[in-house]
Image 1 (spheres, rainbow, N blue to C red):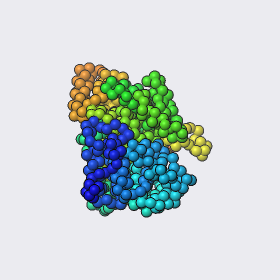
Image 2 (cartoon, helix red, strand yellow):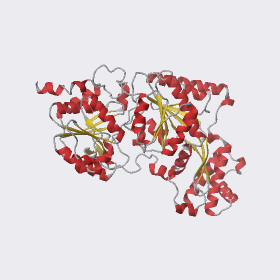
Image 3 (cartoon, one colour):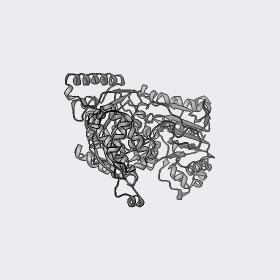
Image 4 (cartoon, rainbow, N blue to C red):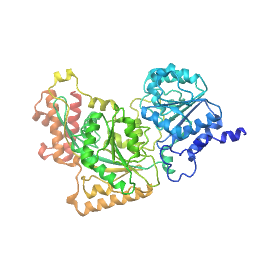
Length: 590
């Protein structure tokens, strides 16, 4: 066999017959054993055979198949003798081992650091980043005992902690080959990712260099992934702060970040009407999807285990079927995910552990019921719904109408690289630390200084709009009405251009219906005079408590500063001006 023939033969018979997107079924239109991008990436790799190679491919594109075909070829040619796969979670270790078995590569997912080494009937091991960080010396010895290929799945996790990055470098520095994979080639911080090359851009910012990139936009054109419709829901939120102040805000407003985080938290409260209504609407959407995709499933991504359990109870009462509940401290969590993937049941509820890498190809409807706000987590979460199995399948994700999330949804196709020197507030998005602070339980000292605890009081949900392919469709509508169903009831099998055309027609129909029946128009909450007066009074009350001033004096001062008559006679704009003025005063009085 000539070197050229050897290079062309990328793997064994087993690997050659691996589905392009194993363990899921091949996407519609796939007639060869490799997708075009996988073939192209392999050719690029073998044209140079570098020691390090970073592949960024959108979730659902088939990174696992690409990596195993490459591993099979390197094993077959004797370039490497051992394979170590490093994955973020225990579930993904098993998933990799099963995929590798299909490719004719035997990986041991049960290897433990205490074993020191693995039996020679295996070609290698599947371990987690945490496992490597716990005892890097064990994995260093394994790596250097023979020529090794290291596959770093979702390699951005290598920068999760400084100690992790140091451990991974120690363990795999001596590897013959390293293949790094990611569906999200960026982090929200500036921790360097091991074995990734950084070069300065035109502004001198050190940015990660990807050797091969297969973006969501390109995968969408190739029908490899599904298009995603984002159903955004607004509403008015009311809560009591830890100082005993009652606050009210509307989702979708450009508000102060701390107000936004508190309103967001209120929306996600299982006892409130907002999340209950969104779950009902999502279940209606799932039923509509199952008319054309019989096994379509849904996933609710929750912030924590307590909320996950409560969401599961709500879905049980809504759908009549007990959802699959996946919790991180459950020893059977991996089995539960697999069982759900192989079943036809409707819903799975999970905490953040299902946010990336978990393959459940039948997921078609999602509810983003988590407080995570970073671009990294959002991209990972949406990646659970884009894995295409047949042409025309779409995905639908329900989310709060929060500017941060709407911006991320609108930029789903945007390619991001990892920048080491990026300013902390580079993207202007809501910092996860604010959400964590909003969700943090109060400590003993707080309880001593205040008789109150943070408490959600009331929430309601209103359909806001649909985001699709960078465009917005629809306008505010009450849930459980024809206006809402116009959008959540669209067919589940449509080409992207058909989706856009149908959304435009539904939007026109909605506008015509409102024009013909103006009494049925749902006014935005921010246009309600009553709501604006209540908000102004709440802010005046907060400021009065903090400064000791009388309410009437604060109202009078606001009136002098902004103009206009007394509150009952003030116009909408005059009320808005006073609200803005008093908010600034409240912020300064903190």
